[in-house]
Image (tube, rainbow, N blue to C red; front, side):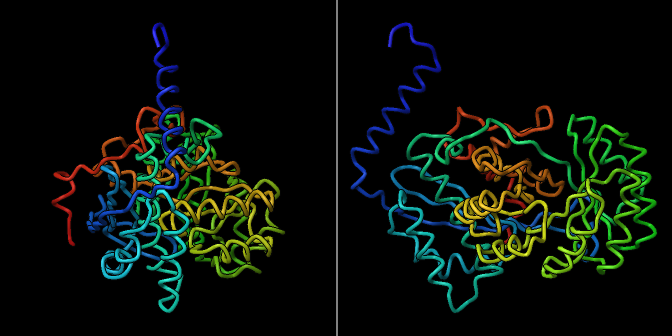
Length: 389
């Protein structure tokens, strides 16, 4: 292509790859191997939210190989998840067609029927499913967003952390720091002490100014009556997002808060959704203004796309929970998605572990269209010191 631009050459190459793939679509690409490992990373300070405390995070990473390519996927889970992958799901996936992701996904879901779909089973399937999508995109030499069907080039993010264990000074410094990075939305944890929550929100609003949007997350710590009372107080500080004001299992309670909260305050939940039925029940109940889904929990990108389809049907916006590097490509393809969570712990881990980790630009994460798949590569030497299995 003499005189063709780099973009035209790249487009022509991809069209050739796609044409070759179509012409040989009756030929499977056998998955040759699956490897899994777990790593435990200490937090940089003690952390807590409204209902839980922790001092470390475990990431479980899967690699799949087929056709001379390797796909990477991961979840934030426990070593039991890695063991389930190695003991059961590896044997289900190896030998299947890497191009037939739905077949692999269905087989994994079928295999865990007697173990229970929620919890570590869905976490394990999530890690493998994201690796399957990454592998398929690499086999086709495509960025994953293009394989999904890209509708945007970047996805807005909100800075998330603001743990209840932080002093007010540390809390304000973290959220103010995101604002200085042009991240125009920030979220803090609440729920330990209702009176202290008000004072902490007051301090944060003063620290970030009026131009930064403020979200709060109670992680289900409040009762219905207390949550409703707090909404009126929060509105004085222009809080526009109230995540899990009551338990996400209390759909009637979420609907109650949603119906009675100030008009500008959106009620969000869904991060503990492991399957399609969970999300369907939440939307049928009218429990949320914004649905959250997490591809490291809801059985991977395949499950996330199911949640996105439901959101379109119910005309409810979708937000990605945690794992920002994992969600950037799906975020640029899922039509109802409005933003992704730029969670402090996972940002730290993904920067340590992966080359190709996306960095915020103008308050958004942008897909790298010059890299196949998710564009992530494990930095094995940096990760090794955290390895536990």
